[in-house]
Length: 165
Image (cartoon, rainbow, N blue to C red; front, side, top):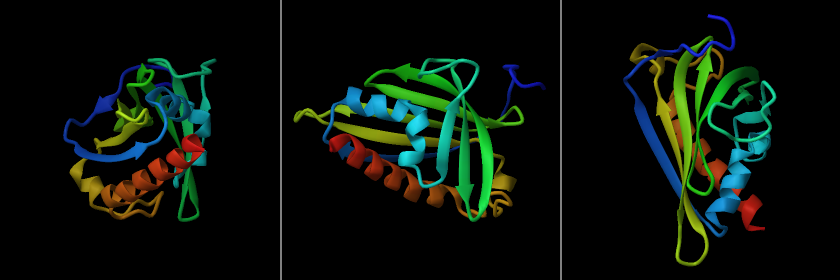
């Protein structure tokens, strides 16, 4: 399939992971930071940069962007499409390579009584089981779920530092 086509191959079996953190900033302020994907390299330990594609300049359902990741001396690019862009509530996107949808990421925001919010980062892994249990030739990661759990905690910590200051 050529780039720009919307058909995707989806494996329905998923691994689901959620990591939450309270941040002393409004849900809208945190949403604005995380949905500006060009800033993702500021807080992610693996994604070093993102760029909007096809004229997109901000988060909107259907907007596409590329994310460049680095780990263990390797670099790779992932194609992403925004699936939710509800300011202050939810930002989500699907990740694909060669038209294969292999993961989804989401950020959900819940107000706290003190004017801050709880941010929950969510990862769903759609890769087939036989791939999940092998070390990645690209990233070098053996246990992607544990790696992502730690990375998600780091991402939320860095995000908090950026928006709380």
